[in-house]
Image (cartoon, rainbow, N blue to C red; front, top):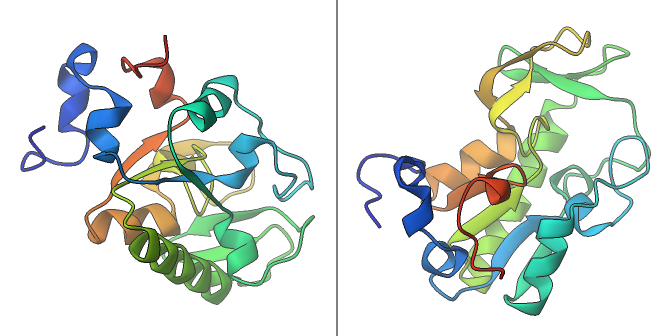
Amino acid sequence: LDWKNGPKSWLRNPMNTTLKELSHSKPILVSACLLGINCTYRGDSNLHPAVMQLLSRFTIIPICPEQLGGLCTPRTAAEIQSEKVIMKDGTDVTLHFARGAAETLRLAELYGCKLAILKQRSPSCGNGTIYDGSHQGRQIRGDGITTRRLREAGLAILSEEDLDTIKAGLK
């Protein structure tokens, strides 16, 4: 795999890429909500069948950066506004999100993870698409706080939506 052209360069020819190649046979960090853990801001999950299939093939490390950063579940929705993370009620939770990103990176380093599969559009885990900060449901290009931190540390990042795009080796 050619990582010199950016973390998503493998998407140019997705049929030649497998999760095994991306993970380098190391544990994979996965947003806990995608595994059916009730940790979203609403207090429910975002269970994703393709992510669940990974459990039988890979060692998975479930993470919820918001909880690792000290936020409760359920909690008020938050979105990135400029460089801050602001809840719908106006509360600035930037430090919680930064702490959650740091703890997630610590887990990645402890377990030797090279790949993370994170929840698309989340202010922590969004990968290429996040909400615009207006709390009106509008999406913009951008990455969540944890995604940025992990990518800076050299991890490859996928979203649950990417699993439908690449040859995941699940068959």
